[in-house]
Image (cartoon, rainbow, N blue to C red; front, side):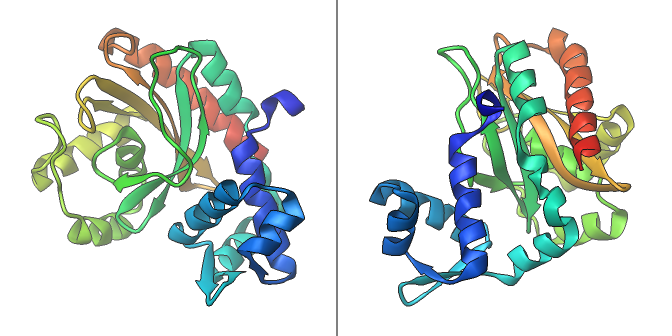
Amino acid sequence: MKQYEVATLKKGLLILDALQEKNMTLREVIQTFSFNKSTAFRLLYTLEIMGYVKKIDNSYSLTKKMGFLSTSFNSKANWLSVPPLYELSREVGETTYVGILYGTEVVTAQVVDGTHSMRAHSEVGDRAPVHLSALGKVILAFLDKTKLDEILKELTLVQNTKNTFVDLHLLKEHLKVIRKQGYAVDDEETEIGLRCIAAPVIFEGNMISAVAISGPALRLNKKLDRTLSKKLIQCSSRISKML
């Protein structure tokens, strides 16, 4: 249904589809899809920094990472279409996200803007150290121990605010709590005045991504954590079933 489409995401997926057929230059992308130059460049740049395409000379092509995703999820990758995320955003009025793990960072893979004039802002391709956000923490919490240990060895615990976890032992204990309760909270750890709640998306027993709600701390206060976490878990369950 048209009202559920995310225009920017759709444009990026169209480019990936086209690159499966042949390598393309920026000019060819512009001509093929009638994108303006700025839009085409930003889309290609985002796909490049996320590791899905590579640029050699002036030509863009798919990477092995994209080939892996195609093999792993095949046509089921259309889980990125947004009905559950869109409906959740409209229900609570806040910005909703999908995030994926990329090395020691979490990358925003999908965004549905909230309806409030004062709301959280993000774009597809935004990335941050995995320990800073609810998205990242819930992903860490649901990784298998071997993978988690590998990431924590490489992770630099940068501090954005006074609330950021910068002690590795405390972070590990915090992740145990997250796994037990089934959701994570970013309590002004990324930015003062901003709170976020996230839940994992589980597919065939494996954590593949996370969904989140984010907004101003005054509106997204602690009293709402339990209610919103239930809605997020329902949303992630719907996405899992779509797969």
